[in-house]
Length: 238
Ligand SMILES: [Zn+2]
Image (cartoon, rainbow, N blue to C red; front, side, top):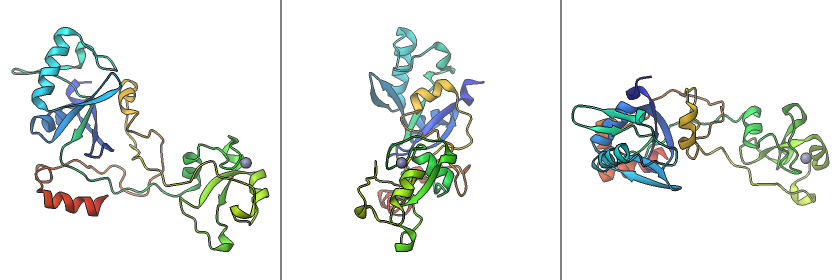
């Protein structure tokens, strides 16, 4: 693959993975000040604006200094004026938005969230041997929501029956919540990139409700939003 077409992970300003883009586009974002490169070194994440990234690229190329995932000279883009290392991850400087995408509340997704483990006794089981338990039972007003359902083995399900937790001696292993991290759907992610992306990306293949392929990158207009409008985005999109 042409290095300019290789995939770069895009984080919003809150360090949430929101998309991938081509290396070419990532470098444009760096050049125009819309993003900084993120590099993991000695376990820390360091940010580089374009001039610093150029300097870092040069130093790396000539000294062979490596980041945590290593470098080789195939990671470098040579242009007439620049020698630039392909970033693996960029963080947008202005964009706070988050994809408008909900992870569907389905049996399959509940099993995935709970890692196919009974949330009362901790037994890991095959999907066929798991039930979905309403923590507050439906007949007592419990709703089917991410925070009120968990996977449960047949034994625990039987033991709990229609009771609420305080009427039993059973305890939840953890408080259930909706999956938080944005799942990057339907992307061809290469193994080498997984290493540096894994901290930010949930590689589970969640079922999602809508719009899994929507682009969520800033246009130049969005990137130059005034503080007021950024505040607006904060309150409406997150
Ligand atoms: Zn159990």
